[in-house]
Length: 69
Image (cartoon, rainbow, N blue to C red; front, side, top):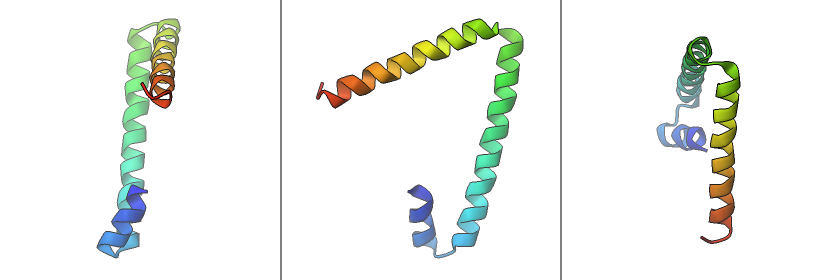
């Protein structure tokens, strides 16, 4: 949605596409590098458990928000 809005606002969809694609590649590379570093320092089982807890928290927060709380 944001990219569509930027394309409409600046009326240069090619530049917006190139910029957004470059940003996606950069963020993905950063995520891969950070993930490799975390797995070297922290055991994989702990990473899986912590990520499961975080996702469970997101699920609970979504359910509470959907219930109107």
